[in-house]
Image (cartoon, rainbow, N blue to C red; front, side):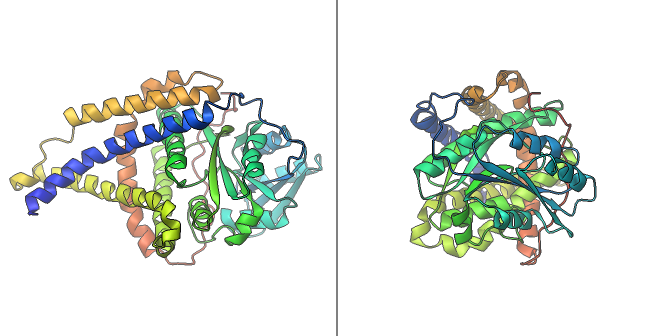
Length: 424
């Protein structure tokens, strides 16, 4: 294969890869919907109930969450569940988080507060909480999230039916919806994240539980050594560790949790670089385990991650030669006349709109408001988020490779956006 053929193949790959993945996700999600979701006719507010429901421990790691943690804890104390405890781990907060938690603990026997004197990171906070917990089922919630009142029953249900279920990931819903970035992310969590999790459950394994809301079987966590302390995304790492050790990870779309997302480009960029870097770190750490036949069900997840990173670099290459072409005369094979969407962009755009429409139809049953009002804003997703994803991946790969192994991942307060109630 000559150089010209290679370049042509790269250009075709840049177009066909997202097109192929979109239809792959849609196919898997539709199958998941008709095979599982459509058969479950219960509404979100009427979850299945068992007389022998296991006791639950909520773990809430916090760092500088004075603005949000009271709402988070109140939502947990108001859960429709018979027996549970709430453990808040205050990880060396420098604001009023500790004082707020202590005041709440004084008025509720269900709430316990653990204070860490130095910044240990979210993974250590979860470890401490898991050790202190009294119960086998651990539900982990971020300190700025609001768990829907009936979500615990939905999260616990899969554990009671399958002894090999090690984790259940919930369904995060974006609650700050005022800016363009926030409105696009409403669609992203439905049409991209929700769709992908459904498809991955059909095709084999889940790439990651949602770090903001996930339930775990403590014995499963113990068998893999709990959360790693040196990974920038502890949720991806624990998901891979569990599944590589033959534990099952389920997705429960009825387990709603209202979250805050970045509403500035800087905050969004930092988040996406961290996500991309976390995926590469996990791939590097578990690569040898992936080579064994017993872990073949994880191969599709790993291949998808590797190919998506390769696609990001192909996109970067195309933008680079287009930029150079503005100043230099490049060979014909390297000439890119424009980066504006042509007929290929029209096809990708139409596919995205179909994907978004499908996901909104599926996810509309989980929203008190019509998701269709965000459909217009979602059309900006390919232009904004694909570019950010590609750029973040290009930056993240070398950062993950050169990162010093064993370096503790500590808290860095993210962009929480605009504070609203869960019903906004």
